[in-house]
Image 1: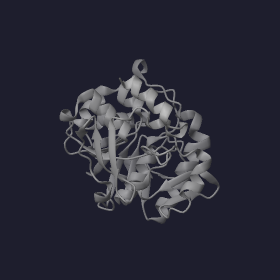
Image 2: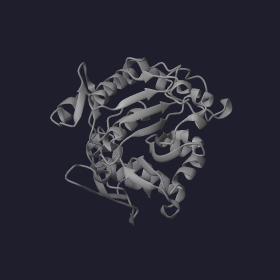
Image 3: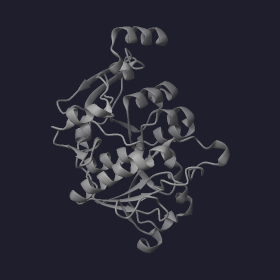
Image 4: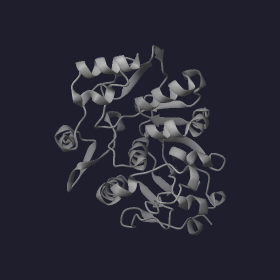
Length: 300
């Protein structure tokens, strides 16, 4: 039946709507005037979601953002002061040592390939999981709505909104240039940062870029980031072994997209008085972008 619906959708919708084909007709949504999805039904089930508006600016202080680079294995997390944490992808392996309050997963392949990690994440009733409608659907299909204990906060790629046409890279600027919350890089019309995630988040090839936009929206004022190495891509992530390492194409995007995007994010966050401390001392990201500090020195 799913294949039949997909074929019907393709015949009745133009190619720019193709990213919705796996959702129709199972997903029903309602949007607020701000653009965010405030009601979600999936396969006739009402899915509880946290309104993004209720989170805007409601937090302050410090937060630990946990990426998944190999350098995490060499950190002494016991020395870190207590603070809430946001994780991405497989960082949940640290759940017994850091206080995860927020999580971000936008890689649908990760949900497919690492269900054992997803199960632990959704079991955490004190955690807010930021994911797309596609992510919500995949998790419900695999685990059922009844098994989900965490809270869903629905986010969208600004170029791939639900039931709206895809925005091509060369159309990002004309589409969003008049949005006061969206700031484009001075020399790139395909790189943008949104301080109000209710109307979409801009991608830069890495989930950490999504996380930075989310955390700016939430209101945190100082971010400590671990595992943001952006090098040694041949090595397993800190929670992997050589025989179960998931593939990545991130290395191909580092110079052309990731670094320019992080540089852009850095300028916006500095202007908003958000300090970012990169605790990966071997990171390929320069001090000109994020201040690189040794955790053994600042967390004595």
